[in-house]
Image 1 (cartoon, rainbow, N blue to C red):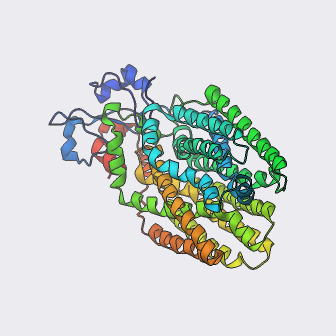
Image 2 (image 1 turned 180 degrees about the vertical axis):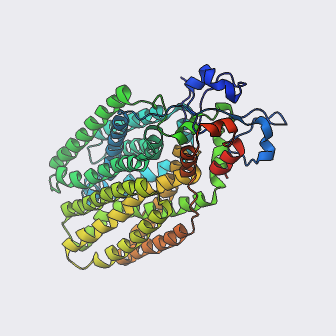
Image 3 (image 1 turned 30 degrees about the vertical axis):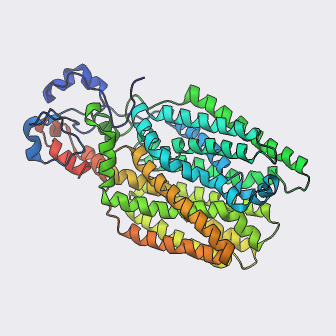
Length: 517
């Protein structure tokens, strides 16, 4: 199967000069952006990589210019986005279907709270060792294969759980949850990648937000439906019947989505949607190195700061979502259904926040300012939630939890899109994958630590623990340098005219300095 990669492209007749390209077949097949570049071997016989720190002296007259080609938006981009979002929602639902009724499953399987917490934390743990090979797979096989395999794991895990509806089958249900957690690694970092490959410059952040919304919609359903489908009844046979119905529903949905991905989901459009995406496509395969790309990302100081701050924020979100039932039941006994509704409120408010943030970014391009403001408000929301949880008024918890969700979940697409800006023209899947890896690490640490603190000192101490790390993340976010490389590349295209390609004003050194340094 041919390789598919937004950072790779095939070239024909590499020796043609700039003035010969309009007459060549390759000029029709390629999708370069603003006078996209082609490099000849350097003085020592090595190819010059776009990831290298080069200056004009290093390239000299070896930079060759390629004319602009057509870009186009396809209507089917929305089909790809919503189908992916549905797969992500299905997987996210299965992450929370145990935790929000943890007391019921603890009684059914006769297990302790830590065991039930691991049914959620396995999603976080699995991500860490698997993300790097799956990022390599994304670079070498493309988005279709990755989403297809992810939806297959999601389907298989859902069917395994059906065989676990017995008090002695906790190991089987854990196996099914583990298989579903593998699917998460394939889908969690896709939104920014899919948005860049399919969507235009003025809608890419909104598309990324909708991709994140899919995951959040699954979380919302995961908070809402399990308490309704699995009531807290005393009869174990009746309880098993309710659990079995829930598992059959999730398996049926996962199977339907897998079939749709097989027949509907596509790799990428024939023509690129933006000039920056066209430029990324034009990089020759032999001049792209996955390992070199990772190294460049890890040398990017602004991106490293973002990795840490993203992990702190989303890790807190994972801890709150995992332990929400325990926190609510501790102060409001017998309110399992309302615990689910509070979780639903968090996610619904977060979905609104995500969409608003995405639209705001597309209109203003204020990535650093918006990210900092939303991070700060996440800290404020966490403080208010911690202070009001034990007041004894459940309606207050609904309001404060909703405010927390609006900002904390709204931060998710901001982190993805800010990362793409800071790391262009590296693969969007790689940058978002590293962000999610950080989130999983902090999510495991925060969930375990907060759970222990809650058991020993109560919910207030556990939530203050999270507030401290959100404060650290807010300060670090303020230190991130706003280097919007993708925006700079698109702006260069808008400012360039046909004469720029002929005159050579858009030469290799200037473009590399704009996009790589």
